[in-house]
Length: 73
Image (cartoon, rainbow, N blue to C red; front, top):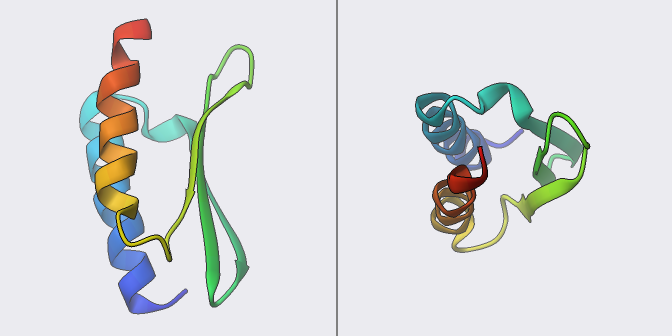
């Protein structure tokens, strides 16, 4: 994983850890250029949010999804 992508993933994982859902986040490396991060409901396995680290607003969008979906937990 490229250093820039690792920093983005680390930022998302820190937010998820703070909110208590870090264990629900999965990082999938398809290649050095393509890293996908998914958040799934632990009971139903339903996808809550998915994004790729190459997206310009990756951290901001994932943070928004984490915070807006916490009301369901």
